[in-house]
Image 1 (tube, helix red, strand yellow):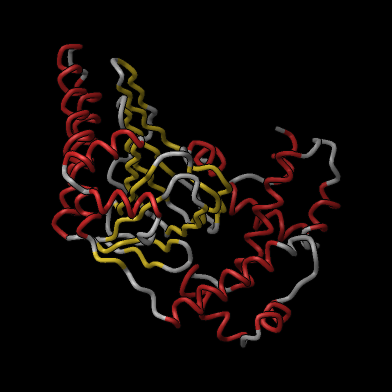
Image 2: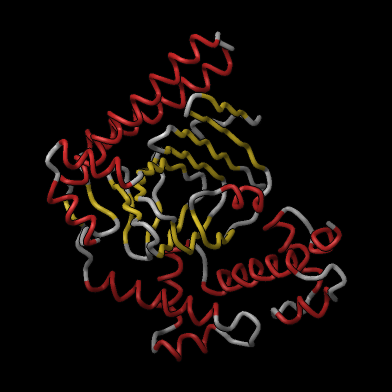
Length: 337
């Protein structure tokens, strides 16, 4: 299911190099650890949660491996560096409500760009983060002037279809880096061997991976969306906006359909295709996530009945069960923390 699933925390920080691996059995702690993402992360499936975040940093680049057992929706913006992402294993995701990501896709995350990314259960992805200086140097060294111009102008779509062999090689190198690091921890090598391992990892990251992923993007085929795909994406986005603007108001699926001038069946199909659930269930999860955030920020003397009813949850027993399935705790436990 997961590539690296050690249920212990590992940490190494020396000589302009760091490696951290963390295991989480709590959704909130997992979402708090996800950097450099800045936004909200919605948990969209019940059941026992587990997730792993593995981070490799050199003085020039950063490599992240994120793995988790639940459905997630990321909504927000990344920070001030370019990021490039590939699936670590054969699990896809949806990006910006439009692009279906497959094993040969490369996702481009522009600095400070708003993103919305849906990730399936047991999803794993590698995220490679470039500082601008390194990206500029590689583009100049390998004469990727047109790629640099397009990246600066943000004229490349957020998902491109790249060469299968190149993406496979990038994935292999990323896997090799983590394999070496985990082995290094398990074998407890000498400090001299640690220095050699760190040097190997930095070279693979700053030279091989950095070069190949930029060349792969320069040679990649841009994905052109069909009109029906764009229309369905537009309907989905508008429906989400209506849900989010009415979290504490009484609104029905029929109201959404009338506002968007679509049939209930059409809306059902779109949500099933994108989020693997009905719009009604998705709306319930949005409300549970919003209520969860509010409970964590409110004064601990808040009236639980009042706040749950504000979000449209009137059956307290069913609400408590749904909340526990999603977040692993009862709302009363959150207020006692």
